[in-house]
Image (cartoon, rainbow, N blue to C red; front, side, top):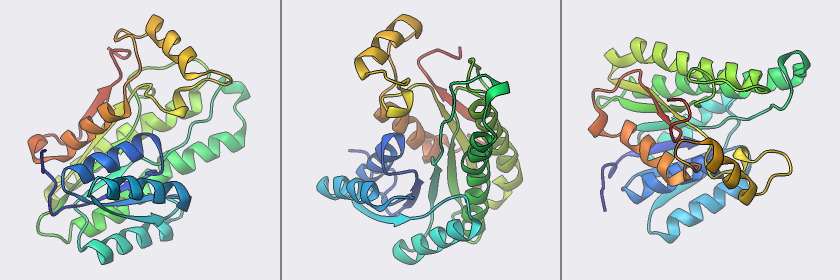
Length: 254
């Protein structure tokens, strides 16, 4: 087993399920002390229990990434609990779609902006404020999407706009803070084996059949495959990656 993150503290937002849970488990398996963060306690506790079952170290902290006070408190609690903040994965986000732009409800647009853009901005600010005080700096990975800067589809304009903003924000922040010893990059997944990839009324078998016909790879990505990309970007193996946006989508945006 690799142990690239032994002695490191890793904060993962949106860690109660899907990609966030897979990322948390992968970091813990490589020696990190993981803070699993999200808005609801029960799924976070499940993530921590799964990590503990494999012999890893983790803690669950509830937080909403849209108020700045919550995010600052989350970073503070992380450092108080484990002593540092070496890696942060800003994964929390939502999807609202299914209608053309002209019919996008204003409340959906504002919810997408709050969670997917403002939430990432506030998380970056709180994480960077801590990391720039550490002699070792840190690494931050924002979870964007292949929908946004890389490709577009009908019926998801709000989500696409916010994820494109995450990609641009990542690049700008990376240039601003590499001199502080903080590497900031993004990973942009395509459809993966999570509930977010299911269309209304669709089963996993339906999704897999649809993907087999439409994706160059012929399937969705596993959450473990997305997690592997995140760990690479955050690791010393990617020490010269600054402001990159790594697409992991089976070739859909190629």
